[in-house]
Image (cartoon, rainbow, N blue to C red; front, side, top):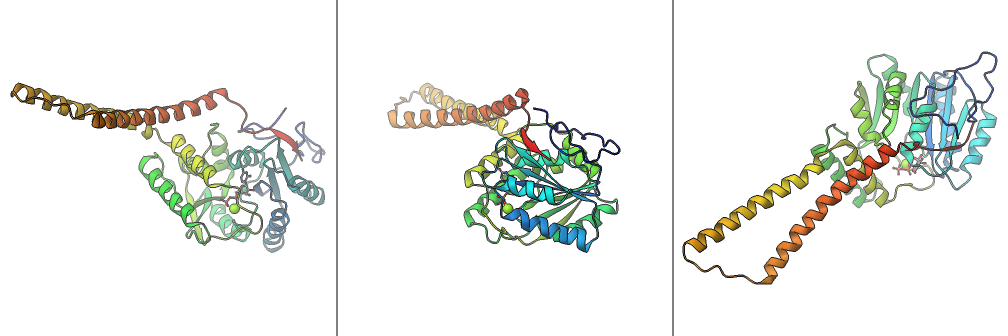
Length: 340
Ligand code: UDP
Ligand code: MG
């Protein structure tokens, strides 16, 4: 099935054929001033609120008529796609991509960025946790030319379950220790980016995508905006605890090779420990003392401990191997079933 590739810049606009449809179903369109990229998984109730708020803030208040919405339906099972069809019919600035199944938020954001044509591109959640009212301020920062990205971070984790906050903090702490890049605590995916910044993101073709790491990796000057955590407008969070844990592991594997060194470090430590013990026994024996065997309990504990460490190390190796396997298969990041 033809679909936009990760770093594809899109079809050219043929004069007089602005409203024709591309082979993959997407309307052929020109370059607007701002593209809003919105990943959606079961957001039927949130879409109207977001659309209306964005139109109010950007079009009516700021007078920016030249905008496009790129909604990405990430395999929703509710009527999200119908909502998108409805809004696309009402407003020609609304476009959508609908995936053949759920490919995850990272894939949805990538698809939206690859489809965006705007001079400036904003990525935001459908649930109004990323307030469109902040966009004009972010735009001012990037429009000046000094910055290529306006990023946001939440300064509180109010309203979040305490266990989740604890793990999130643990993750950022761990990441700071092991990763080659610095990841900002509380950074959200709500960003306004210049075209050159978006193209840099799209030039990274890795399958194991971790945006929180990709943003600092590509560099550029970023202006930070801080705000208090805002609750969802409607619906529920699509991130289960285990989905977040696996996301955190993916991030560590994608941006650090340090866990691989754990096996070597532990191996050296155990080797040194064994040398000390062996020397002790030899010296004792040479000095004429009898070396008595302490029994099987201590031996069993040592065997269990070392084999546990070995399996743990093999497991880490396996994780990197598995990620390498998905990279070399080079499967598409997502498959589009319908687009407009
Ligand atoms: N989302 C998605 N695919 C997924 C999970 C989430 O497109 O597999 C979208 C979701 O519809 C929302 C955004 O990503 O627009 C953020 O998700 P959510 O609000 O559930 O996450 P939270 O804000 O709780 O971190
Ligand atoms: Mg949310």
